[in-house]
Image (cartoon, rainbow, N blue to C red; front, top):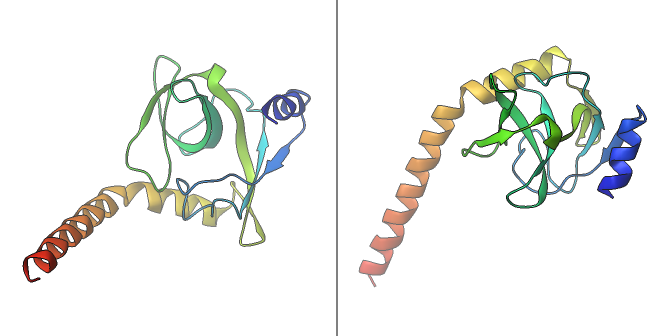
Length: 150
């Protein structure tokens, strides 16, 4: 499927498909929502969502650009992830998201609502990370207490 997608993108067309996984939640519900890709026109920008090939794992991934490095590479991060992926090069990029369908409704990546979402989700990340750590710690503690009381 990927060679056909690349062929279509290289011909200047867009490609639509339904990605799997939970890494881009809440923007995308894996296996349900659809994204529309096009070939990037020049360098990607902060907060662009792109599909790329990860050589270490041999997988194709859809994540957001969180940093454009001076050496020409990108730092990528899924909206629902906390570990960044480094050294994503221009040659790794397959396409950039121009539109997506969430719960059956088309959304543009140029809309004000989308831009607000991007800013809010990115800048609230430290608080979400802290909340997740507290939640996991409580689960661990409660699990141990339940075992002690038995």
